[in-house]
Length: 295
Image (cartoon, rainbow, N blue to C red; front, side, top):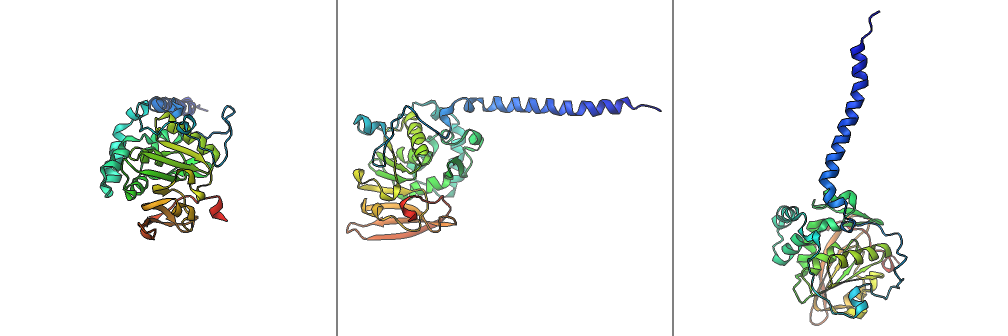
């Protein structure tokens, strides 16, 4: 009987070649991503504990500026992240934001400036400049860039604006607002996200953004009134304290509707006499607001 040695050779050789090709592809991928994965400050890592960080309650600010008694300062942009992936941010703005009607030069500049790759998980670095929401842990997401730009545009921020944000998440929306406004106060109900967002914003030089661990339903009375309020989680109604803390002539933008379905982005305005009106903008889907609003 004749033995087919060539067939056996091919049988053994094939899996070896597959393994070699896989190893080479993995090496190329890691080399291409090395600029980003080696720098952990550029990711939204979940914080499980901070043994050197004193605890604070819902009424205590987590901003370095408040702790030191300093006045807020504009972003300094000295962090190396601002020099990374600039072309990707430019293309994101041109293709998905400017092309869809966002024209405020301040908003466009902010979206080109904020390094979104600092606010996502390591596993999502390649997708950081895609126009889609990404999971950041703890059941939360970083919003689609177009929606971030749209909500910021709706508020008509300027260099004198004082902004309150409900739902800090990774801190990306707060950073975008801080590129334009003089002061941004942002509240996060999940302690781990509040701590990590505070550190990330401080590391990136956003000295005019202050993070607080608290229930956003109650707003931030000590810092009120605010020119604008942005809510990045869905509720069935506008929490009354937010209306109270809005300046006459101010605006609130927030998603309203079923927290577990499609909601409507709504622009709420308050006139000089304190009268409140609202206008529907577009359908959206946000994670639900938690805390007091659920009761």
